[in-house]
Length: 478
Image (tube, rainbow, N blue to C red; front, side):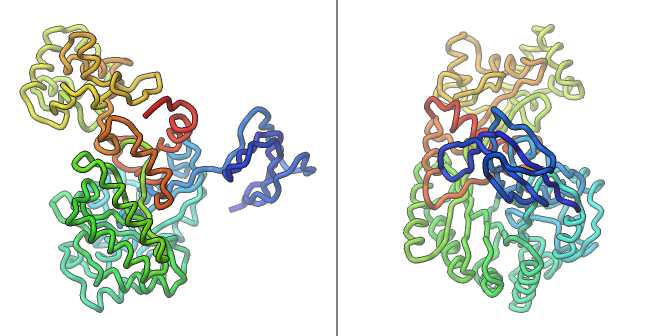
């Protein structure tokens, strides 16, 4: 593939070093920046960037584009948010290595853990690989708008080596561990960026199997040793209890991260979020990591730049009214048609509200209805500040309407495309102050966008636009 050559002229360069912006030309030759200077003299294509910013692209270290990259050269929507490099193979999940008999299992795993429809994967992946290096060769044959780095996913390697024993989480034998280590070493030599695994019970198959969740240091250490022998490579994992690291789990996962870093001579990143069960626990984890770093161990919390949410709407996987009988009469309609029927039929509107009041689901929490500091908020044209006055409970109090009535009005807005923002994590204090502290900690790294995954519940591929709009431009408080 021939790389482009061009010069970007007269742009305001913000180079990411913290230095002041400056006006300059930027010369790109064969895909590489070769000069940043004023008035570069060259005959290549010229792009006028006067009054525009010229900046480095974002590197999204936590995506699940493993399947999408086989059919979408733009890796949408990440390409729309300033991302120029994506890293796949996170959480130990991916599509290589794989034997033909194991393809269905890997598709089901991706669907059940990352909410990517199996039908899309089955119809689009051509499976012209078996080994991980062959998978990388397949990617290399593509013509992508973004650069791609791939991690070796532990669950796929485990299934490839152990077959059904791996899927059933049986302990690996020493021979199994040695073969997994050999595959990881070979893949690193051929260009893989790193290795990932998962220990969270939140990652399960449709039938309840957990991919590699029970694997411990005995299985992972030989892999870490192989990584060290290949010169080191980043290790990423989703820890046990990631959605709530309780003291009994916390210390073991922290020590596992430190041990793997020592053995692999490599940085280890562990997913880290704030959860409502213990809103201060993330501080303890980062303090442990900072102390470990003083002894030469490289351990980091992989954090995100905002709250982790479920979006509720007429076309999302969840909404507050979906379990009522009357919703079944509407679910086959377009969003616009649903909104029109509800707005033109007060009886239907009341029945939907009554049906939601009589059923239990994740939206039926008292904190949504009574706690004005809890930010179940509508998403609209304006940039939300995620403040208490914007919550459904506050709007309900101001308008003297039932909370469910407010929710239904939100969903009917924008021609039926209105959305509710339900924050699971990183908002236990009613603001984003904890996120701000995490981002600034020396032992944290920005990630967890999950771009390409959870397609019916969230859209955090836009994290990097949020980093600029909220943190750099619009933030007034939390």
